[in-house]
Length: 232
Ligand code: HEC
Image (cartoon, rainbow, N blue to C red; front, side):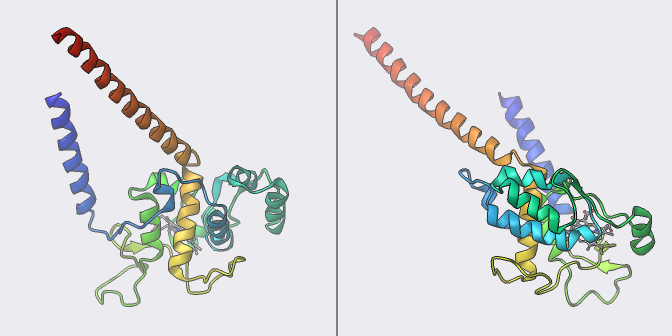
């Protein structure tokens, strides 16, 4: 037992220091999907989808996401089909960028990664994506040499030009499209595309904990009874 605790403690310290020493600014945000009782919120998914399909898809693909997947979070088939139609695609087709990898390489020097599971692929997940999208300061260090300065990106030199600007898009629900709002919504959307089962798993975890708690209390009560009888 001591050994296990020791190993746990050591790995905790190591992972914490690895995170701190990367030198990039990734602040923790408040995410409603972190709440134990959360469900995926249709309105947020819709806003994140809007950012993803009006902005990000110009360069990035979402090859594991199709409009049919939207039906898992409360969109009807008719709604999903209508959304696919506005993008000139079919409900079962993956969301692919029209930008060819070779053209991307010519324009940016790098190929934009597929974003379907980016929240799992990068340390920090949604916090990281949010930090990247909001990490283009107005004033950059005078000695910076490179493509674009980004406070969250490793080495601060990122090939992606700042993709968001105030009121870049218009939300159907009237939410003001600030950079922070769009960054939050699309990072939320990408959490869903990366881990659609996350909230189910969390709820299951909670049930298991409650069950174990009740079981522990029962065990204590039974134990007491047995000893009470023995002492008599
Ligand atoms: C004009 C093209 C373009 C647009 C639009 C664009 N990106 Fe990118 N993105 C890139 C390129 C190029 C890279 C590769 C950057 C690098 O490795 O230096 C990248 C990289 C990224 C990364 C990965 C950073 C990493 O750790 O490797 C994330 C996350 C990302 N983009 C998110 C987004 C999101 C979300 C949107 C929509 C709001 C978006 N991008 C819009 C071109 C774009």
